[in-house]
Image (cartoon, rainbow, N blue to C red):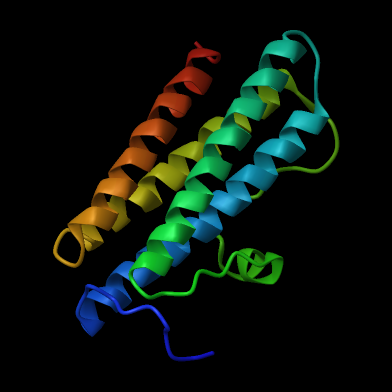
Length: 158
């Protein structure tokens, strides 16, 4: 179905800008949830349990916001696409290494991944400033949560 069965409260131009921001955020958050779970399964070494549990918290945060972002897209008449192929082709989240990783390398990778995702989200906050303040508010909320997680991961490097 190419035409939206949902009438958007936004103009076509604003819907396109906002829809693109939501779709990009959806893909990045799906990827983050998968990366954090991969890291969760493969972290080893001293302080394993703490990192293992903290990674599950990150997975839960990403999954919560995946659903909220997808539902917001639907609310403005944009069909969200979180399929694996779409995530692979369009995620801007940095790669995570294969195999077991030490707690130290896991923390460093997650810090870098969160920094990149936060940078992308902050650009989308700016992009949606004129197109849709409701979506901008959601992006601000997601950024706040990920910046808090970023701080907690960085604190492990101190």
